[in-house]
Image 1 (tube, rainbow, N blue to C red):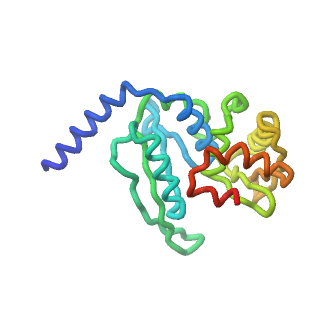
Image 2 (cartoon, one colour):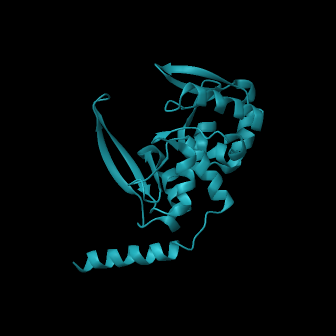
Length: 216
């Protein structure tokens, strides 16, 4: 009972302190990148403030903990959680680490940017939002090396939005890419081998050490 009261008091004090916090420009660029990847922003109810949600497999534990360090001021816990889920398709158990921020008005902006009728979309002004920092976090969050190129796993976006992202890679960063069909109505972006060196120069300074293997 005492622990329960303490936890409630801790969360109340934490939230009061965090009401005075703002997102700096660097953190904003990170959010844009991770929301193009696996991370998400949601609202528990339509009239609630939004919160950021992060989850990575056990292999990427260090990266997930790095993200937690970035967003810890907005969290009501002292460390990420661990969970095991059974996947029927793969017939095995997957281990992952995850955390969610508390709900704050500052996150509503990202919910409105990335969600339309509760469906995740690519913002129409993504050209103005995506920077080399955002590109690096997008790559860490949901990208991987593929043959002599690099893949962005954009399965959850519509073809029109994937085409937009491919265009922005060229317009913003002079990175050439192709769109590959992964499965029915699902597409990925493949960075061509002739753009890989340039891509690496742009993103490597912002890569967490544990994720550099994706660029090797």
